[in-house]
Length: 453
Ligand SMILES: [Zn+2]
Image (cartoon, rainbow, N blue to C red; front, side, top):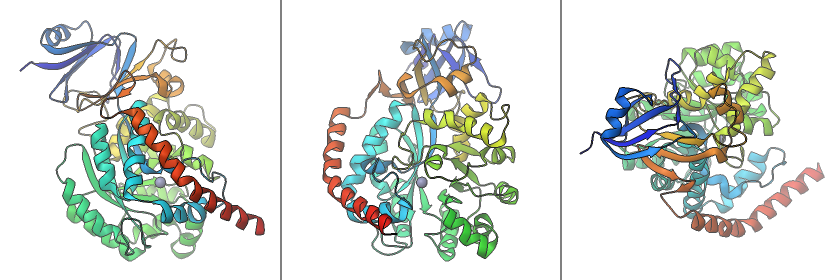
């Protein structure tokens, strides 16, 4: 037994710890899936680990940082990416009917694996997902070697994996017992939204989550119709949700666009965590999320791409660069959401939002060795004066070269190690060909409806 399984050296190490430590050049020692040590490459400690390492990896010309945490996804929706992009009320008029026709266990399995490749190859190591057949997504994440918080969806209408309204609750119970105690797959429950799950069932889910000690994923304050409905009945979406008991430290609420200062205070006092989804929101013609104000109020805030249908790109680089830009624009201030704060949100902030900050989110001794190595000798990456500015504003998905989860290489030299990428690509192309007639049929119906108005 060696004192160190893997010794990585020569790269800059951006730790994202509380003190903002950067070792340039630095080293990382990995043992038993955990980070055993990190520090300057020339430290005496580095020599000690190097001499005892099972594998020594020369990472000169690279930068190491904690794996990205994508706090809100619907990974199987890659099968429908790019369909009916400009349809009004796309969710109700296009996506719900489409899912009723096409959603199967097989589609979920294949499309989920496909999306894992896009996420892992761009440096994401952990994601939070809400969809149907989450047990298939768990298996896919396992195959890809990724870490995931997976919420089985609950809705008031029959779904592909639960013919009874609210059948998702029972499905979630089974899913939870199947994966209980797994070190990388964390099952949970995902009521879809305040407008698709009634107050009674939000209450049941809140109680069940408490009893089973699991997290809750929810879309909240996302749409204009939802805002208007609950403003009329309760003053705001958040005030309404508070009457159901769902607002708690267990809750990870995605979107959170329609909030006034009182709602932000309420979310903060209930210690709700937030998944900020800027790319998806920008496409739907909605207000800019008050994300900076929420973080100022002490709310745990992570970043997210949303599903491939809503956010399109599943890389975190896309939303990481949007977060500071949009907040600076919203507040008319250049000095807010520094590059360091933005990078924190994409890594450690996401870990906090998922309730996993004790295990992931930073490169520190004792935490899981979830590490990204990105090329710095690339034309978009030089020169480097400020690592955070480079990582937030300049880095692109193609710069990511290697990715580790629990000290295991899940991406090596831009290839997935868990499965054959070409095979997954071929299967997605075949899947899309089989979906195309239904996508075109429903798309044409939505377009005709639009014209007749
Ligand atoms: Zn969503």
